[in-house]
Length: 338
Image (cartoon, rainbow, N blue to C red; front, top):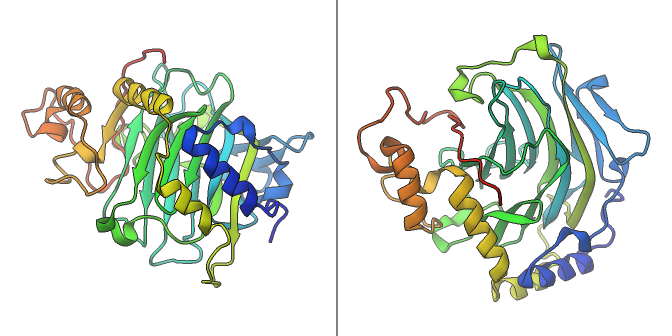
């Protein structure tokens, strides 16, 4: 296994104990790119900066690009600082995610950050999603706007994954928590996964359901990754023995995974910036899925924004409908500072 595993089930246990009272990424070291990752595709569209800690990924008319972790991991904390392309970015998708699709083709797991580009003058959107055991028919997408321009500077995006929780962070602010429920069964990601980062052409769905496509007159589109953190249990997907990290999960499962102050920040973020959640989508799901925790404030805000998708009422604008078989029909939220 690669150098990114620093023996680190002990470090991972420390991380989870810290996360009970509120995690801050500054407690953990970062690693050079070549200690944890290797190029996935894109030839010279992937460039490692001379400091070894920053990577440029580009999309042009020839190809996108991407990299993948040297190891697979069963649970942990995974993070990178990312700066997105500026100007016209419609159709461009930048992704930072976990997957085991190469190992489990028919029953793969995923935990996704996806960044969806936009036309000039409109903001990038973030989409998060999870799949377990090939449950791609049950999308669990959420989408958000941000309180900053992610093309202006680097911002940190992080995933904390245990056997009972998944938490997404932006600059140490938790923006989404998925708590495993008994009825989720295999829909909760539970098999070892690799970390990926890619930039690619998502013209068919990424911006307004495919209305606006990548314009290669603005290429190359370049995104930058830095401050890599890979802290988890490196795993052999063919080895089903109990991980030495498992003792830490008992501690976390008996405590609140997000501190009170963090939960306040998360609630504030979701109130101001969440623009779509599958939990409130009455077109796709007549009854919310088991892990959904319904907030009356979130429900009312989304219903007032889109009464068809989130409430079953009459549309305010013709043609604004959720596309069942596409991963995003993106909408912009309010620009209110955190």
